[in-house]
Every structure is written in C-alpha cells, then in structure tokens.
Length: 325
Image 1 (cartoon, rainbow, N blue to C red):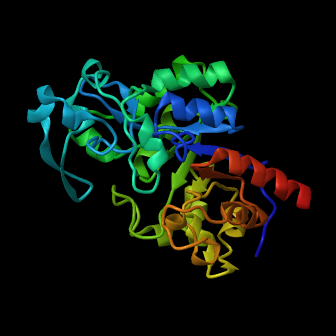
Image 2: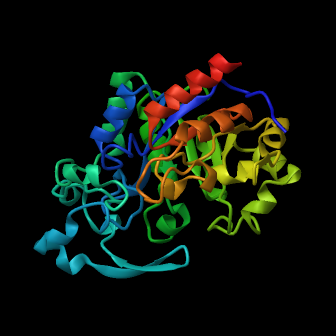
C-alpha cells in the first residue's frame, strides 16, 4: 500500500553528514548543508551546568578523546541508564568548559575509516552553536531529547531547557523550522504544554518507550495508537524496517497519514552493514551498497522525509523520485 506524502519530503541530515565527517560536529553539519540537507539533526544531552550539547549519547568514551585526558581519568564511572548498565565517561559529570577541552572522534571507525582522519580536530557543539549555524545557513533543526526521564530523575530536566533556547531564537510555533523528537512519550506531552513547535514521536522496531507510557512500540503503531500519537505529535519517526514486511509495504505510511501524522523514517546509510541484503554490494560490511534504491523505494511509499547519514545521496534520490513521477 502506498500513500501520497502529506508534506513535501525533507532530507534530514542525521547527526550531520555523519557518513563523511565525525557525527555531531559543526563540520558534519556544515557539510550536510553544503550537500543540500533541509534539516540538521542534533541529539541533545545536558552538561553538569545544564547546557545542552550534541552527542549521540551521554556516554562519550566512543565519540571523544576523553580517555586520553588524564585529568578526567577519575570521572570514568558506572551508571544504569534506561535499564542498561555502562562504564564510561558521562556528559552530565562535566561542565561545558571541561567538555570544550575535548575533541570529537569517529564513532564507527571500522565502517568509516576515512572519517577517523578527522579525529581530534573538532569540538563538541552546543545547541546554541547549532542554532546559530542553522540561522546563518537558512536550514531547520531536528533536536532529539535523549533519555529525558533519566535526566529529570538526576536533577537535569531537559524539556524546559530545550524549549527556552528555541524560543530565545524566535522559534516558538508550528511554522518554525524545528521538529522536536523523542523515543519517550511523556516528555513530548510535557513539551506540548510549553510550545507550539512540531513534535515527532520516534518509534523502534523492538521494545517500548523508556518511560513506560505504552506497553511497546508495536501497540503505538496500531491505528488506535497512531490516533493517540496524533493528539500531541505532528508526525512519527519509525525505524525504516517498519515500512516493509520483506518486499511488501506494511501500510504504516498510509495508516499514519490517515491519522494526520507525517512519517520520517530513520536511518538511511550507505554501508552494507546497514542495508537490506538485496541492496548490498560485495561482502565487506564497510562497502557501500545501493542506498539510492533504498531511498527511492521509501519515497515511493509516500514518506514525508527521511533521516540519512548521506544527505547528498538523499537529495539526489528525492530529485530522482520526483522526476520519476
């Protein structure tokens, strides 16, 4: 089953052009904009002094050079976050000034060795840095609130911090070039009381929201579940695999559109490790397969946008899909 998009499809640069530069760096965001992305996406976590910064997770051992800083050796600790126990360094244990002494590194060096040549060159950006870049380059932003229930429980609630900074930037309504996303539910419901900015409910192929607001994500994607989401959110961000049952569309796009929700699936990546078997090229997990085909097939279902680590390919796929109509 296919459906017409409710909105012209947008290309969302997932953590920037993260297939070509270390993720969540201004360099990755700049390149994504140069390649034609409509929106840049930061994952946000709070520092010890409650400044929102862009990191994939609050654990930063894999994405920064913190392990090479002897002055921070004692900060390595063990925490349980959303049911998962980790031993690492965590953003909330560092002030912004301390984080700014660190430098980013490639999170997936085995799959993206070319990105590793940029290790040590880029600082960790704040939400303010990203807003300034987006305004200067005339693109939107798509911030994700990471682990909001966890952070609220340890005294670093992020919802109000995020909304306040967006409002200071003059972005406070549904026409703002902003989408706020979360895998949790209650923080989106809370954010809905604070702002008119568009909200996106993220869903995964397995499990459920960490705040326990639904039994699982599958229940949220039933027609009744989608209608409930539409009561507070503008759209959904499903795992791209949820669009398909083998080679047959699941009907999720049509069901979401029937509920008035836009659909922005995640995440389209070129490496064989992330592609369906039929679209892989060769045996090397780091080799690139037919990402263009995967994107075009999704666009043919009527999606309203998509997250990608390769925005240049995304722009080309959107153009090709439009020309094919």
